[in-house]
Image 1 (tube, rainbow, N blue to C red):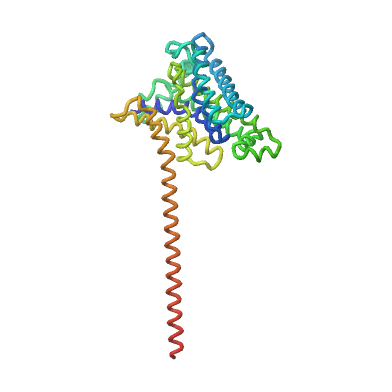
Image 2: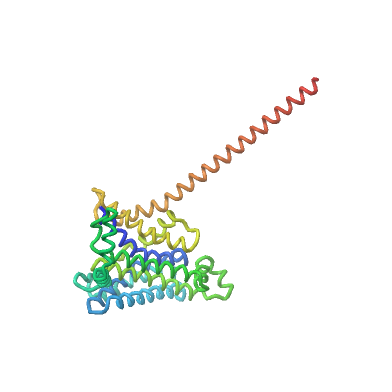
Length: 344
């Protein structure tokens, strides 16, 4: 149980990078970008095929980021210059990327079991420097022994995801970042300030899919394979992470919201891991579990808000009734006093 939860947290931190990319397109740009399902696999395909052919895994991952950025830019061009509906532009790019990903990999699946990846290099580093032994001793002292064979993935991905989250926060506070946020909020208004919203949309979608491709490259190396179908439903997972995180942690500021997205991705993976431990559920039910989680994340906050609103109206109605009763009692007392004074 403990090792399963540990693995869920590890994968959740990697998927958090993808969720941050979905947040940029879905929340910041208000763009329903379905390119995610394709660019996730593109990142995985680029990294896998380069690693198999002897390329340094870190360099392969960087190239995957660049190709993901280009895929997002093409979606932006289809929408802004081709005047294609945003949803349709994403669908078209997703379909095109399926064939492109097959071309890149040469087959539907590329195994990485015996290949050197980013994580195998980090595992070797943690083992030789004694970092693994240190964390294992700390975990054993608090009764959490045998959680994992290496802490390299968890710690390195925590640092990478935290760095990306901080850079995203800082970027969204710059002039370009503020322009991106304004583009998503009100294109007509920002155009009135002579800003080129088309360029901001293309840039935003490029950055979004660059993060998604990075997550795909890391997941391929984490899972030791890249598959042409591994991106199916990624947009739903990303949206689930965003929605769950916002419902749990709130959206008071940009920094809080990006933290919520990261937290939402981890919570999502933990919930899925727990759900799959139920006897009557199987691995093939993951998409159904994802759909149920998203529905619950969308419906429950509305039900809670509706109940709060009903309670507020009920309290207000009771206060009004109490005030009317006090006014009525006061009026009767005044009438009684006046009648008594007249009789005297």
